[in-house]
Length: 172
Image (cartoon, one colour):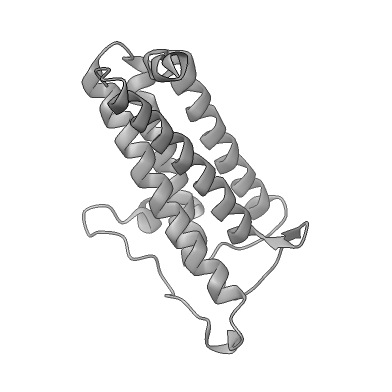
């Protein structure tokens, strides 16, 4: 457990987190641009959560020796993971609803006025797809179901690292 607690003090661990989230973002962009799968609003929110994980990993990756950057990285990682999981769970529930005809989501993402990402970067954050459509499956699970698993794994790892740090009384 001591080695696990020390993991957050290494920049390599944070770069690995950043790289893993970046790979998932690249895969999402491949699905969108190479395979022609249009993302819906829920897909875009999940993409934003993945960007959140990647971006919160950058600060401690660059400055791992400062407790405040490690703390911010761990909290940001956990928050983005839990938010991504909740959106993915809601999305999966919409897709598997018995009344999927009524499983519609917003037409445009509901970003804050100070950050209209869908207007600034429409290729990344516009949402022309429909939430109820299941355009892709692997091993019987749709994309939001896989993202539930991915975000749950991210959240679990972040929670374990936070717990180990707190129980061992490490400075974050």
